[in-house]
Amino acid sequence: ERRLPLEQASNFRDVGGYVTKDGKTVRWGKAFRSGAMPLLTEADYAQIGGLGLDAVVDLRSLEERQLTADVVDDRTGALFIANDYSMRTLFAGMQQPGGENMYKGMEVLLVPQLRSLYRRIMAQEGAVLYHCSAGQDRTGIATALLYDFLGVDRETIIKDYHLSTEWRDPRWEMPKFDPKDFADNPIVKMYASMPADQRGKANPLYTPSGQSHLAQFFVHLDATYGGSEGYMRQKLGFTDDQLAKLRAAMLD
Image 1 (tube, rainbow, N blue to C red):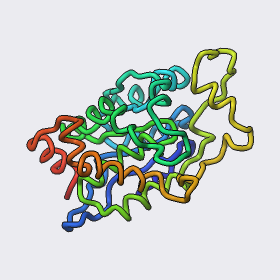
Image 2 (cartoon, rainbow, N blue to C red; image 1 turned 180 degrees about the horizontal axis):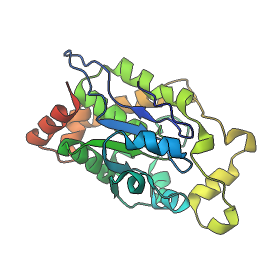
Image 3 (tube, rainbow, N blue to C red; image 1 turned 135 degrees about the vertical axis):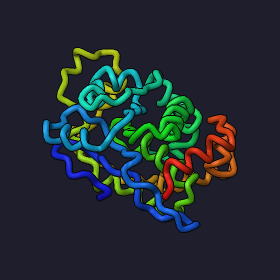
Image 4 (cartoon, one colour; image 1 turned 30 degrees about the vertical axis):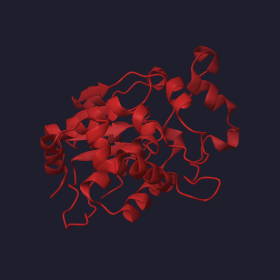
């Protein structure tokens, strides 16, 4: 089952199951993706504990982790992996949030995080869970690059990306907090500036012109790196052997 039936999780799903253009299948039970998980129930922890997690890769910034630290690794015995960066750096490097070409440049800002994630999958020590806050933007880029590299067709990848609008539940992505306790935190400022009726909604992932954010990112990816494999070689520094290991880890 692609979407795990957890009680208080957002956008938690198995990455496996899609068929590639050469007839292979993305392996079930090897990689899982999610939004932040600060409000999981005991039943949720029990279910996640049965996934055989080797590692939890947190793609979030220092400021996000300050608000809600991961505990899934502690509860499951999985290795915790994160690369420190400030959300201010991410905001500064991104195009206008919600605007055209919003993800352009994100693949550069997230090089340490994506390198760590894919290396852990290559290691084949067990299942890997990776997440950001909503499980749609940074996690969506990480997943789309992986699928594209493995040979899943882009129409399928884009449809999968847009499942976040349906499968996110923002209620479970952030605990309640007093903004006064985090006066200098850019995440708190962003959240506090949102209209109250928008905080619990997952916004559709389309640009003002009606294009998919991910579809626009693929145009940038192809023009800049010649595709996902070119990106992995040029920016992540992966060798032929490493790329072969990534395929072997993720394909049946």
